[in-house]
Length: 608
Figure 1 (cartoon, rainbow, N blue to C red):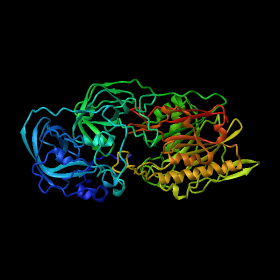
Figure 2 (cartoon, rainbow, N blue to C red):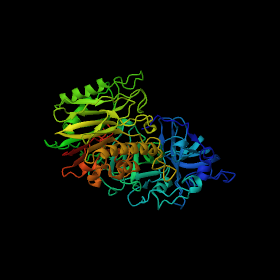
Figure 3 (tube, rainbow, N blue to C red):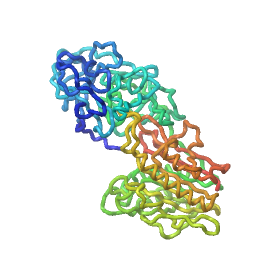
């Protein structure tokens, strides 16, 4: 995820920012001496007065942001027009702590501008602002305009209009239809005082003192209180981010399924990290939903339990080893094979050429044993320094842990960071040319990305091929709330190439041995309905076993109010046809504010 260090470097006028992409007309009236806020906001996402000076714009201060680099205040016209598309609120960017307070009646003279959080290359929408202001306080202690209620009735079920093909897919120049599209509805409230009533938390409080609620409690609910992202057409319009104008120490510490009760009120903002946001000057009391971390069942003697777990940049300096160990032993019930992602080298993010990770892995193994689990053995391949992406200097890689009392590893020499593993036929059975080995490590599909780790295991006399994966991240994709609709998912290109290679490797095993047991698992960084998953499954070589779960249980990650699948375990036909396949997405992290990783581990049990 990108850093949240604030910057105003992207604060530019629409004239410079949105030009052709948003088709903004700068042929507005020559004089802006008597404009009202709703005139400045206009009926599209960008102001018809962008780049012009507006004089004596009147309003009542509804909220003050006195921290960070985006200091300023919101004001609202207490005398609205009758057009639902035009917002009556606007943010006044001061750049320093404002000398106004809520309830002040003010006039502002300044330049109308469009600020794009995250910069224009992000694809984000812009926020209409008045910058370089001259402020006159007329009176104090006035009633703040009554907040507009946001609830299940007011938010449309359709998420966004399609973008204008003549403007590269931008929705900036389209007339807002707040009764038809949720993004238009939220935009029509930009800068205004709004409120929500009782609202269920659908993304837990994070370290930046923000959380997500839904104002639509019946919109694709998960079994445990979240909101499911089940397709590209299911963006979940009731999601809304909540931040606070107060001290972060006073922000509620919430988990998924908790409820903000009563009334939460404040200005409607738009930011880089989630889009439309209620910046609360009043937050309703938090009522706990009592959510508990899940525990899966123990595998039987004849079942092989295989798990995948992204331990999020684990290095020897971390304080989470005991927690990860407890999760593996108690919540995952000590799987026979655990494919780990994001194991860092022995000195973590120190970029000094170190690539070995034996200290990291053995520290985890020792912690697992101390927690009452087995003494795992392990296999991995050290990457070439700084070639596998992730945190610079960290050299994250995939690692296999396995319980040697339950499963054995077939060691076959020849695997290293740059040598491609292959498949041979020996006595009618498929064998890896190297075990462990890496799949096509020189292929451009793996540039700045983790190379899959393939290994050959034996359980109760039967060989099982396991492929640990960590595909390229979704970083850089345009957000669901982007000004470009549909948003571009540029990172898919690399994952599609990666999925194609893994699918081809699995087919090379099945070509030699049709009934081979193959498990490809890991952080695929893509959904079970995605093009990446379809390519992995191509021609029936694999099947994503999370699809064996009811839809309201299919999630491994929680992002901006959408619970979704990023981690998957895919199996070959011989395993899928078996009568004893059991899958569990073990929810121990994604729904909780005190998570030790942002991913939930996955466990598959089957009888080879």
